[in-house]
Length: 147
Image (tube, rainbow, N blue to C red):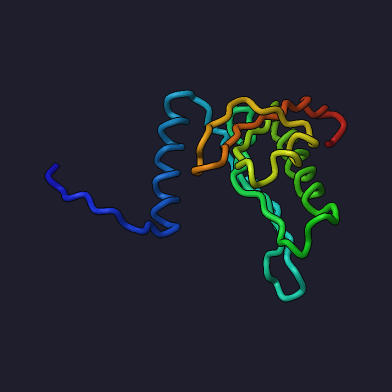
């Protein structure tokens, strides 16, 4: 292919298309096709998002990809409630672990307080900071308990 490669600003649809193709490949190779998006959003009275957590579940794991609480809503327990809701849903879906990446200037202490351990550290990403891959193991939900 002689196409010229030029950097672009992808649309959300472009990114979604690529993510869908990667998922299709992964499901085809592993035989695991139980992937689902996972999200909880909190909106104010005007409908504006003031907090949220989202990611996906697949193959017994839950990956948190975005987790944010507006500055004015922090230190009120909202983040913990969002996190607990995501964890409960991950367990309901049969997940045995949660994974996420966070920067040293974000919330690694919050995650550690919530049972996460650092599996890997990438130094100088971004420059002058660190990036942590963190995991929390989950107990399996008891299907008979309805939780």
